Amino acid sequence: MKIFIDTANIDMIKEVNSWGILDGVTTNPSLIAKEKTDLRTCVKKISEIVDGPISAEAISMDAEAMVKEGRSLSKIHPNINVKLPMCIEAMKATNVLASEGIAVNMTLIFSPQQALLAAKAGARYVSPFVGRLDDIGQVGSEMLAQIVAVFRNYDFDTEIIAASIRHPVHAFEAAALGCDIATIPYDVLKKMVAHPKTDEGIKLFLADHEKSKK
Ligand code: G3P
Image (cartoon, rainbow, N blue to C red; front, top):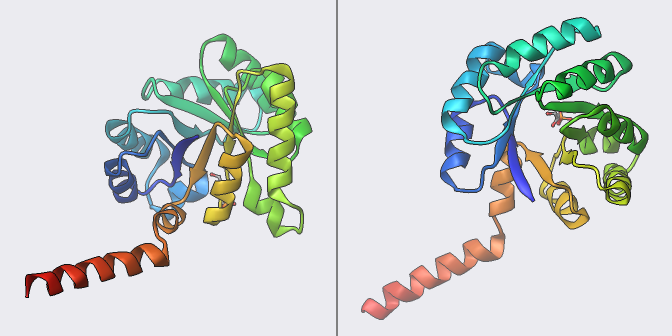
């Protein structure tokens, strides 16, 4: 499974990139606002750090404007893909952008039906939001499993990005189900590294090493 970081924070991106595990980056308007930056400056900076797909979300709400915005965003760097929110206007725009070779990440996916339509419209990626389904008492990982099953049935090229990952179990579920990508926040990535038995083991080895010197 490819690992993307879900942030617009440049320091976090640099840090995780240095771990040697980073395949791409996703941003959204909320993440950009949190960093008090603007989308174009931010994704340009990210493209200088990470050699992989970078999602930049359009804010237009009709197909024509989405296409215009998508074309402009895609010109920032060849690795930029255009994030569009799942809706009819976005499907129309995806159809046009895909025919021009511009990758679309269809976001705010909450059902296998939406993922199927996004893939058929030509989306390069679909982003099902796992945590936000859990938030309303539904099981996000079940939706992921359904999308994986549908895409396998028909051999779609569209890649599944498990998004709205809130804790390490979500990341594990995405990998166990065979999602192509999980986009994971920095704090969750750090939690995935850690294990109390690892910390305990390191302490013990270091203490024993000290003893052996005496
Ligand atoms: O990038 C979109 C998604 O990952 C947002 O996650 O935690 O705001 O639901 P969250």
